[in-house]
Length: 114
Image (cartoon, rainbow, N blue to C red; front, top):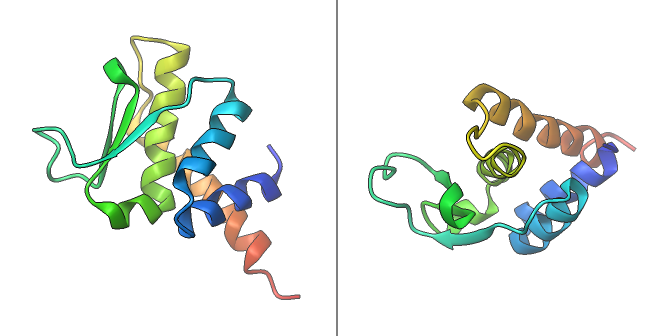
């Protein structure tokens, strides 16, 4: 996937356009658009975010977390993996790597010296 697309996704999230970012990601990965909600389910209160496969929802701790690319992309990875294999949401390590890859593309594309 091209670095400019990844950088744009991170930029959207940082600028509070998380739903738009998720729409583009869902189209790019050919998966359903996940729902997003503020407030975590019981048992996940120590996390910044979580993904619930049953209702395809990314839940985040608070409204500020909606602007956290790492959390949004990490949870979107679980959405992709669950869509591909209903029994497997992917590992935390792979979800972290997925999110970091987008963030690195943003840093190298948007923060590179001119």
